[in-house]
Image (cartoon, rainbow, N blue to C red; front, top):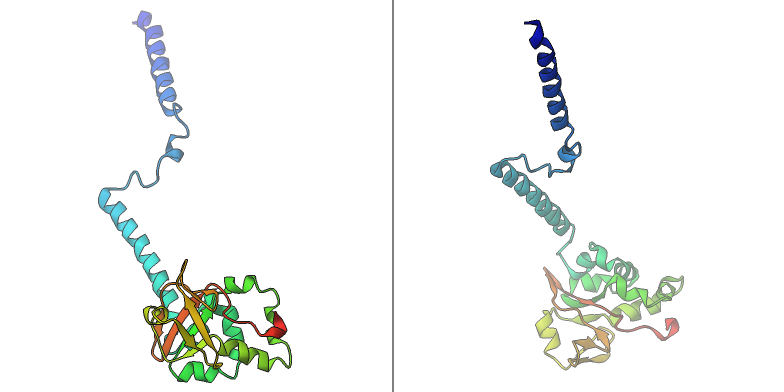
Length: 203
């Protein structure tokens, strides 16, 4: 019996060594695996559906922030046109844009980046320049994008007639027109990649 004792000890030590090697074979394996790998297909699908629902809810929340009552309400509630909205708010034409069913040509914030002195429009005593600026971005009557681009030109609220050019994209008085439109309950909004008109005093 005593002759088998060293063999038993050796067997025990060998077994423990193998177990320790197995445990330490890949210490980073548990952390490097995909955490979703252990989930069942149905559980993984539920998690992906939940993420998709969260994205849709976020998108819907963004839409509800955009006020579609009028062109005025739309641009003043949409971050893309916040610079133009500040100028529109200061204009005496703001009520007409809100109530008279117009097509509002709204330059994006990026359109103002190339216009370093646009803030001069907002200086004290610049009401005439503000109104001139806005009047050239308003066309009486509500139009869709297709209706707008199908004509050779339009008369703005300022009384000035400006032309549409369809070569190399749609431009209005040389300003690039963004594709599509937003239809509100009382008028439409067409986005612009450029400023349509600048008063001479701020050019």
